[in-house]
Amino acid sequence: ISNITRPKGYNVSFHYQPEMEKHHFGQTHPMKPWRLTLTKSLVMSYGMNFAMDNYTPRAATYEELRDFHTQDYLDFLATVAPEPVPRDLDNHNPDLKFNLGGSDCPLFEGLFDYCSMSGGVSLDAARKICNKESDIAIAWGGGLHHAKKSEASGFCYINDIVLAILQLLRHHPRVLYIDIDVHHGDGVEEAFFSTDRVMTCSFHKYDPLNFFPGTGGLDDNGPKNEHNPGAHHAINVPLNDGITDEQYAWLFQSVIGKIVEKFRPTAICLQCGADSLAGDRIGRFNLQVQGHGACVEYVKGLGLPMIIFGGGGYTPRNVARAWAYETAVAIGCQGRIDPVIPQHTVWREHFRQESLLPSLEQIVGEPRQNRNTQKRLQDVIQHVHEQLRFVNQ
Ligand code: TV7
Ligand code: CA
Ligand code: ZN
Image 1: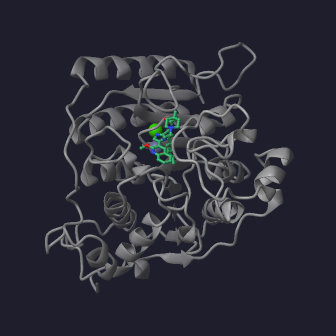
Image 2: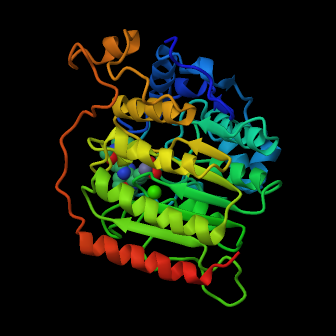
């Protein structure tokens, strides 16, 4: 524990709201806010909390949520009663108001508190970046990228990322949003479709008919009409099952490197959805903790102020591994932490089946067959580079 020291020359802040994890989407629902508890306790057991500024943010206010969401949606969200027995199987109910109450976005006890806390965590991170008290702000409770201004979608009700970016835009001329969740970051992309001050870039599994949300093809770069300054400011990197660390790192660096060169952001938001890890209950990729964390390392190396958000991640042990490792990357101590998970009570209680020496970096779960050819990835990079020819800051 004593070998973890504060980073020299920059500040890392950790924004955490312990009330969030007490909420439940339902017994069989894949989203487990409890993974935040596991992450936090892993971070603490390594002593990383001593190397960061720790904040317990207040919930976002109704007015703050109104910066993006509509009044009628928020009013409904704030007053709907939870269902006595949450529906689990079919989402198919055309009567759902604002897409609320189906199996993906169930109504549960304390839903509005949970949403406003997630918003509060990300807004707090954005404020610390704006007033320069923090250089890297970590918000694992945020990252809910599917929420629309007037609609819930894919386990997301309030788009905390959009709220945080809107806050950053008060002080920063250009913000780059990067999304490594296995799903397309459609809500954030759509929110900034008509501005050239935000560029969005999502890497995701793409299969329009069989994988949620079905959007984010290579050619989807924002509405292309001559009066839209936001045209060409949405970059999508559609992928197939089983992509590996090596392929992903190469793709990530050549795409993000080029974007940064052309767009010249003054701040970066990185959504670190951990469902792109191997062994995820919903995801299809083969990323290891190192490959996922290498994205955080690369972005950190650009030396711009940044917010790191959570997002998806449905195998809680792996989520906690990746996010604890990435917290270490932010601090710059990833080379000094013991790969053997410390004497850790929560871990022991829940994962008895894991060996006596559980490793931080060793993911649980079978790898998938890699369906990404080198040729296809080349073409993707080529397309992105061509797209960026239209962008000149
Ligand atoms: C950011 N995939 C969110 C990702 C949102 C994905 C979906 C489920 C799912 C829901 C469940 C459940 C599930 C094992 C998986 C078309 C459908 C098919 C529901 C069964 N088990 C993020 C949203 C995605 C709910 N939705 O990016 C209750 O999988 O594919 C769909 C839609 C209709 C609804 N059915 C799935 O990671 C945070 N849902 C078990 C219980
Ligand atoms: Ca993504
Ligand atoms: Zn996801």
